[in-house]
Length: 277
Length: 272
Image (cartoon, rainbow over all chains, first blue to last red; front, side, top):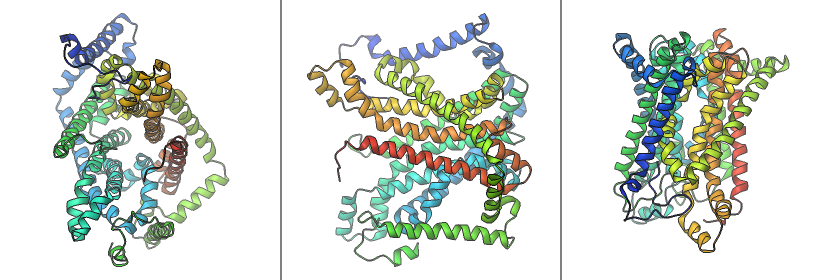
């Protein structure tokens, strides 16, 4: 996560003259942390220090995973969850970015939307699930809607903020040179909003995933959340944790994807500027 | 939007960043608020939308009055409140300590970073069924859910805050022979406070989600239970009332954090 050359106590990590161990400290400690914990989990569980009944153990989770991927039903679940996630998240992107730009650009639109945006954003929209299920049923649509509601607000709020915090000097320069409003928007406002949008996209992934999981746990017939629920009802913690692991991987892949996107959009900057709030 | 662009005097900044006009903000805010409420009520009265799906502002109001005056809602509020306060308090305590130590000790950071990244990316609600297996369906399970939902954002924010302390400040402190404790107290802690508060704000929101989801899945009291139960009974107005209660809680908590934030920003010189 951190790429700084200073550690927190302010000591500079001196470059050069580093042994192999020092230059790979991050990797080594990380590996040690992962392996150490897994070994403790595995053998602690076998020795009865860690309750296998509650926490399972790493090899049992892998075995459960191997069994699971050979069942056709599993792939139906994966497909359902992925569809819900992609559709909900995609819909949120398509609607939240243009709306956010609009609301940020037209002050009065923002004023009119503000009370509702603030209220809906501070609302745990997950709580709308019962109503959503009543409205659109148990199918994919209800999960798409929940994922959408989660991601939409996560994206639109930073987007509005991004438009509103464009550096005034840039706007002044653009208007001084007689740029039309359209041009100001396209060449100044839109580019400087990108880091904010990317932040929203990153937050949105997590929110959409939470929506999919909760929706499926609450009421659904297919999906990985349903698999987790069935596993928990049958007290199969290994299968349950395998399902959780899949959601973790999805989250990691998504966040990494956004990080790449961020890098791509930042590449024109001469030095890394801390533009991201 | 045409309204906005037509009515704009030519000399005003396109973004309205120049003068803040509370009156205009208030007026348009009120218009937005009233228009949506009115459209909602009208659509429901004219039977454009099913009442069982969208209810209507007046029905929600009636439901709220009924359940408040009969006192039905208060035990639910108390139960959810207890779960929430305990879980969030625990997450704050552990999250801040963990974040500070990870931020301070490079090796601890290396050691825990993979796990933190993974757990941060996990939609932790997926763990709710497991937590229920382990802790049962009572208060403990919900406290743990709130704790797990909110601790990672707090830890990660505090961690980032410790790192955000400008190296120059550390150098100055060191040049003046400040002890480790003094550097921590006068440089690291103040520099990481805004980050901590960001973490707390994110954590409060996540915590509310945790309470609701856990109560949806298994419980016999609490606001999440109230919402879920009334959803099954097709009492949509009550569902919305429960959601509004949660929204008010979210707003109040957000405002509280903002007040604390302002208190800690007081020493900063104004830069405009």
